[in-house]
Length: 105
Image (tube, rainbow, N blue to C red; front, side):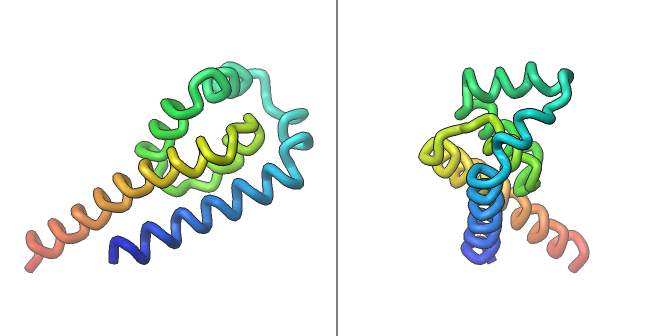
């Protein structure tokens, strides 16, 4: 269950990031609201910390991928941080599910 969920979420995240980076980064950057500019600066200043935190909080939310693409986070940083963050989040989701089965069963 873990491997399937992890690979599926990482692949979906990578496809979203790649498409947004390739075709929509300039368009999206021109339309970022002023309220999000400070967050974009934080992601650019400390991409590992920002993406890791977002992955733990939001798991595989596509907005994380879009935001990373628009902020122009380097691919290697994006993949490494997403892999670690998604592994932890996926493991947590599975543990919650197993705990729920134990409680109900």
